[in-house]
Image (cartoon, rainbow, N blue to C red):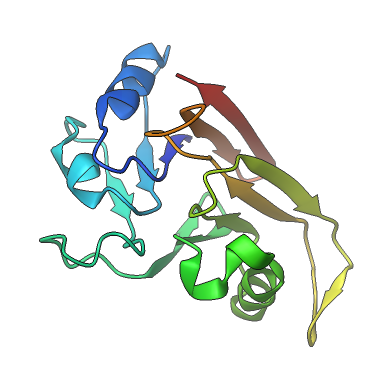
Length: 167
């Protein structure tokens, strides 16, 4: 499964359009992690599913997107959120604890505008939970401001490949 990940377009949808056009093969899904829901909804995706969450700047948006999505894909549990409700600008501890509590092994978030890719190894104890598989933490950065970055996720039952791209 091939997935594109965007966040923080802030009214500038051209980066999403460009990243989509550059993809060499089929895109099976797109995640939008908030702060530009109107941009994400206006981006032409054809029949590609869009999983979108509300960011702190989407309060006036005309959409009913949730604050987070938890979805099973290819044998993995994916948590997608903007991150502001977990205070990610001050650290990702609260987000990691929440992800461990709900059993997520892939955590997608935005808000900081800073690309991040980390793996917490299997066996690590987080709160009351011991991870039974690695937990992948990924922030695509901002597709609308600064360096203008996005993420790709190649997902199979036994493979998680996350990467950043720049517009």
